[in-house]
Length: 210
Ligand code: CTP
Image (cartoon, rainbow, N blue to C red):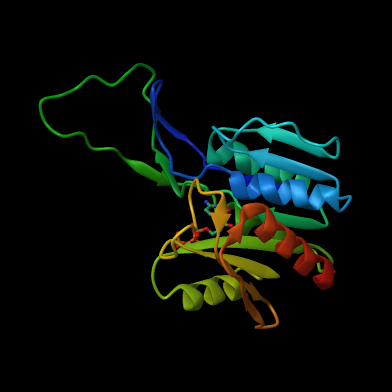
């Protein structure tokens, strides 16, 4: 299995970056839940994801930027039967990283950004019929519609929809409230539960897809 977790940081200069609020708790819970079922897991973590003791059947790889996460995913995707992309990957990176700290100027500062590779999309184009690919979607409006559209467009087997509108769901919390959407058009709305319970629900659904 391949699981991604946490944010990516895109360097602006040696001390600053563009990042997001993801903590990787959902990804760590997923890795733990799949490992408990006996899966051999490669867990690719973005920066700041908590260093916890992991069972022997989880190999953790720490990366910083989206480009490194992409390379690590490409290295491990082919031999993975199931891939779960729970990382919050930065869509853009600064066009160049300044080699020394950018000094304050009297006016504003313009940052030029380049688009990062879309890792999930890249893996979807490389996926064989027997591989399962599961994506995450974080939406703030018209959630189900956007998530269903992503599932179809990216040829995914399942998408886990997180809504920022739900109390107790999302970044940094120990709980989450998600809706699972499947290729078959079935949907399953889960109540607010711990991230580990959400992970176990996902594991059970993946087992029944296999
Ligand atoms: N993802 C990825 N590579 C990126 C950006 C996102 O692999 N450069 C993956 C995430 O790991 C997640 C999924 O894409 O599984 C959805 O990410 P999200 O940011 O919710 O949606 P997008 O499809 O990027 O669309 P938008 O940002 O326009 O809502």
